[in-house]
Length: 352
Image 1 (spheres, helix red, strand yellow):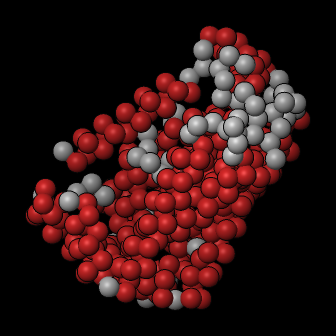
Image 2: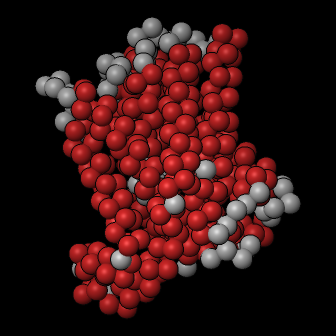
């Protein structure tokens, strides 16, 4: 039943995002022109720069996890850490509704580490990432506010900032008073009244998972983790800017500043933190176009030629990311540290 619900949410998100982003008949002809105008020889330096930054992003995203694991007494050598992380990142794309987030803790569990505690470190990772990104998006949107700003912009920025700030407050409170904090937030959800047995089970799991929040008491590891995270997100945004510079050759109106690229990356990151469509398809493109439209007039208007360039950019950006993470995940499965059997067991544990 839980899997069925997740699949329905995932497929519903896919249908909604594809509906919003799919080009009309006029745009299809413009899209063909945009692809033909993308000369590989001229575009190759930008592609190379983007892939180089993607390597930096991947390494930062993987290696920083050790700073969350260290406070619970776990330290992985670089090889196993990269392999497990790469397979986990691939699973996030492959499994619906972000169920892939459970794969990395599942793989660690097979190495004798508490899966619940490892899941706690992933929760900290997601919340810190969300807070960094929501601050970035809020700052970018706040600087663009005005009568010509789209109606969705500031409400989205406030909601994202509020959600991740509340989550960070929960982390800090839970670390100091685990049982009362979990009980209080569960009461706010009304779950104890609606499903008492489920609420009790969730309460036990959350209290156990809080052990994975120990990095918040470890100033040194937390500081190093935040530095890794800032470099990770900046390199990610810089990659968007480099790729956009290549598309500027196709259409001079497609001009994106570094700040605009960081904001676009942030909006995509917030968007895909929702229950994800299969492989984030449609979802990734839609939020990319929305982000671009804040800095490139008409980028989200299907009746204008600039939309074809924006849509082509969003798709190339998406497929490069998809191929990268799938490729890195498959390479991780070829190492001696992770096997297809390990992945199958971890996947099974992610679908209780």
